[in-house]
Amino acid sequence: MDNNKYKAGFVTLIGRPNVGKSTLMNQLIGQKIAITSAKPQTTRNRIRTVLTTERGQIVFLDTPGIHKAKNKLGDYMVNAAEHTLEEADVILWLVEPTNYIGAGERHIIEELKKGRTPVILVINKTDTVKKEAVLSFIDTYRRELDFAEIVPVSALKGDNTDELVECIFQYLPEGHAFFDEDTITDQPMRQIVAELIREKALRLLEEEVPHGVAVSIESMKETGKLCHIDASIICERDSHKGIIIGRGGLMLKRIGTDARKEIEKMLEMQVNLKLFVKVKKDWRDSDYLLKNFGYNPKDISST
Image (cartoon, rainbow, N blue to C red; front, side, top):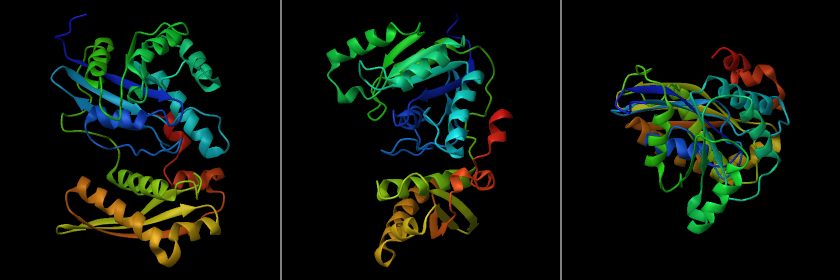
């Protein structure tokens, strides 16, 4: 294969929840697009980001973690992840640095065996283990599947990510770029802003409010050098609403302050952010509300 020819293709990141897919994708493109959290199942939609170099263009598809669904939102997330396997030129499978292969990993292995797409195993979080232990992890997984490559990385610190990009290019087809060189993502700005607010809510609320939180951008408009954003944090119960607002509105203010700082950094302009909290009971099991909040199952099958 001629490494001098321009390459372009789609690369899917898959793995169990909280293995670091969004962190890796943000690291590879050098910009924060996907939200990250210590909580699993943070990513709910497929997120496309683009890395363009002199050698070629990689379109990354970050997917929700593959897990056992408990509601319609869970079904949507798993379908989004598994459907993406069919349209990729290369699959990056992220795993924890361990010799234990659990039921979730076994399920992914069976899914990967069904296809012929090159799979690069990415052993993430190598900064959390001793270097000599990584070889045994590689050996454990090598027995399970015929991987195109096995690359240990630390997505958080950026260790070995350049080598990973080189490996990806080896397996991409020759072709023209899909996006212009300035494109970083195909996500609408409103959706990125909503996700940034949701990230801050997840981080600050920690274990107090479960995953029944969505963010809806009610309005977003620029006047001069100021961007006015009205957004609603959607939760499932009245008790959750009280926690999100906090005593004297303190928690909601903290979420808004943290989100505003990051949105201003991204938009490179001042932001006037107003946050509201609404209760939509059992929204994660409502087809209508799921669609309203941007989780439309039809979007999966049509791409």
